[in-house]
Length: 262
Image (cartoon, rainbow, N blue to C red; front, side, top):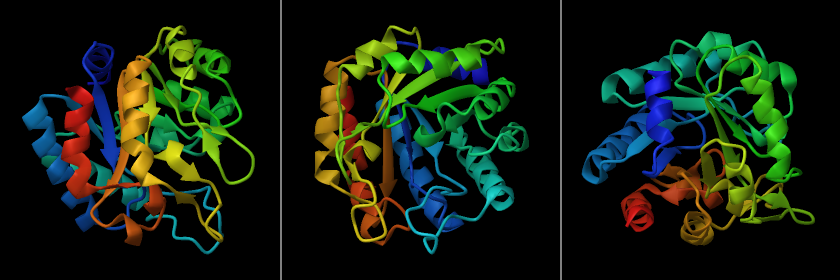
C-alpha cells in the first residue's frame, strides 16, 4: 500500500493529513474519522488520518500525553480497518517505527527530531513513507540533508513538511519561500497549517495559538506550490488535551478543505 499511496500523493492533486492532535479517546477518533471519510468521498481527495499516541514534547510535565504506543497502535488499527483510511502518527524513538510498521502508512518525524539520524534510519527501514517535519530552526534548503538520510537506505518515499520558524520567544513565522525550496529536493511538500499558527509555550505552561489564521496559511501555501495540507481538527478544540488554540473546529473542516481544492 505504501508505494501506491506515495504515487497518489506525488500527483498534482492536493491531499490532506487530518486528525486530532492527540489520541484522547477512541470515541474522539471515531468522530473525526467519520467526518474524514465523508469529506474524502465528497471531494474525491486523499485524506490520511493522523493522531499521536504520545505527545512526548509537551511544555509541562503534568500535561496529558496520550495512551502510549501499545494502546495507540490498537486504536489506529481500528480506525484503519473500520474506515479504510491510511493512517500516520509521530515516532519519537528509534525502536518505535518497527513496532508500528504493520499499522502505520506514513511515519511522521516531529520537527524537533528531524535531524535524529537513528530515528530517520529506523523509519526509513520500515519501507513506509517518511514525512519529515522541518525544524523550527532550519530552512527549506537545510531539509535536503534529513531527506538524504532516508534516501540512503533505498527508501525514496519522502515527504517534507513546513511548520514555521522561531521568531523570538513564543512565536513562529512562516517564510513561504521554504515551500519551493523544499520542492527543489524532489519530494512532495506539505504545509502544516495548524502548527504554523502556534505560540509555543506561550500560554502559561502550555502552547497557545491563533486558529483564525489557518485558512490564510493554507491559501498562501497553495500559492507557493504546496502539494498537501496538514490540518489538526477537534469537535471542541478549546477542550482538547493538546494544541487546542490552533486546531480547526471539526464543523469548519469541510469549508476549509473546499476552499483549498477549489
